[in-house]
Length: 311
Length: 285
Image (cartoon, rainbow over all chains, first blue to last red; front, side, top):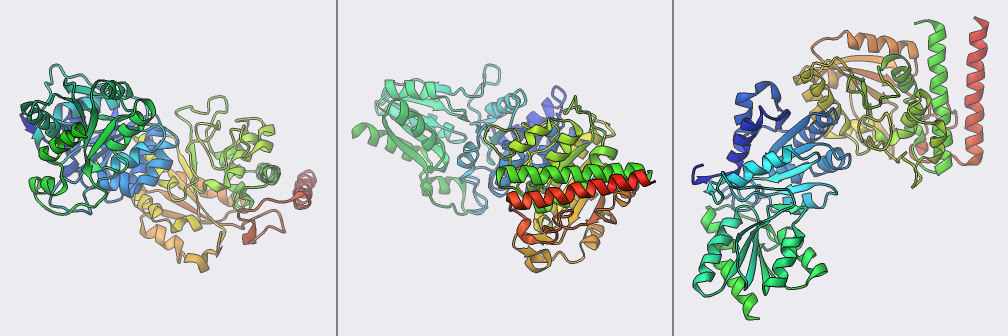
């Protein structure tokens, strides 16, 4: 595995690679070169259908395919899947609980230059409100591949969020195991817990190293499975550390921070600090500039962890 | 098709209408107007055209129907009960909390329902998906879809119309229930469809225009559609909303209102008389 790769590329590679082992069709809405489903199309042209720039039609078509017992992946940008085609996903896919896998790429604000219209900071929130939907957001290319195969082995609707940019590979593809509903502990620690999702997991790991230098032992958890969420690991962290910092490239309203809060407030209330997009829209810019502008960086995570411990 | 068979299909259509009246009356809600305009289409489909097996509702080789105008579920439920997918007695429990007959079709609850619908504009896309899957799996089933005319204001219908033509889905046969009325009034006043036949033709469809209450025309149109290769077919059905119950015909207020006891009695009496008339006609032959 390369040491840097986008999770969307890992998605395309996984579809192409797993196309032999699993029987499924793939739909895209004129973004196959960006969502990377073209990698599947190149190998299995008969199993790939370009639906044109018509995401709503694509989602309901996927539902029809799945109703005939055929697993199907439908891909577009997160914005146009969870956003534009929400109601088709809700009524054609979620309500009849059909075996459709949605690959929403270019999730989050850190996709960069395209700006606020394309930076989907609501998809995790929107998709996890749908009864019975599984919502997954992998941290790196290894986890992305594992997520795709886990979705194939699961009977029912799944939303997967993938990122645009090349990001460091965190996991060892030879040993990494993923299970829907289970989080991964990347680092143990007893002072504070950092729960991150998607591409922010790597930033959380870096922040934990900074905190370590400051004498703070931070536990780092990758909550790839936003729904079903790993409540056990959250409650354990709530009991064993002094508080939780959540980290997401997503609106803090309704996303990971909310999901973790829902568990903690019911089971074992502790202090929570939410690092994420603070209920505002994004803007164009280079990724590092946007990360600094919106506080989606190591510095902000470290600051929130220290604030939580000092109060 | 003999006159006898046509009369039998007409009789089944009227029986479905009775179920529409009785079931919407029993739950004091539902959509009788647009249900009554599609009973002839449903009778033709389930009792002459479609290859289905009531003992195996999920049989993978079956023909499929997507009722895209899902609010007219009472007619579909009536047809499915007449066919034997479930008992007629269930119809009187339409929309009750402990019944499987939901206000709009639910494929997971009701035997014989092929796709959950209700939110307008999505059914043709789902039908396309079934047609794509059928071709991919090399199955020769047909996929039928019933669209409303008001529903055709939804943009997704036209996305789906493009898809069906683009992928040459000649295993799709769609019916457009052109009764001219929608909740807020006449379709032409709310948002006119213009030359709906020309629009579908321009989108690459084979369009056949029929009287949607003429059994023989419907049967001929389905035959012609099945013989059409390389393109989907739309059977544009001129229909009457509320058809068969004279005080409901062409009256927009019956879009989403159930009959009261007196209205139910009048409607049932009229429909029963129609069946007796049909039987007299048949015996006179």
